[in-house]
Length: 127
Image (tube, rainbow, N blue to C red; front, side):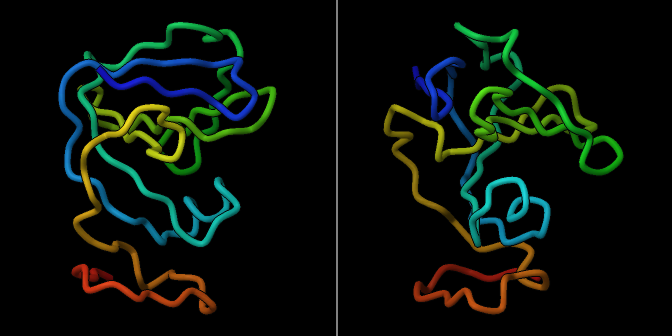
């Protein structure tokens, strides 16, 4: 089981089961939501994810049709993204308190990469 939380600790969650492959996302929406040049995300089965504390402090924002970004309303930490597929969630790996025992498999959405971001690894890169 993996455990995670927001920056202020108000929201805590658990993930039972395996997470999918992780990727470094360079899309504008992830950059704007996180304030960072890249985020690292992985898919998880929605049935394997649950809030264990502070669910009332989770806010939602529909960043594009069918994409709901969930965040802590107290500290702003991005936690998960719900998509049109209700069986899966996108987990923001930076909020994990446990080691996911996975390494990113690729860089995605490079067409919107911040111009000042330099990629120094050999992972596959996808526009």
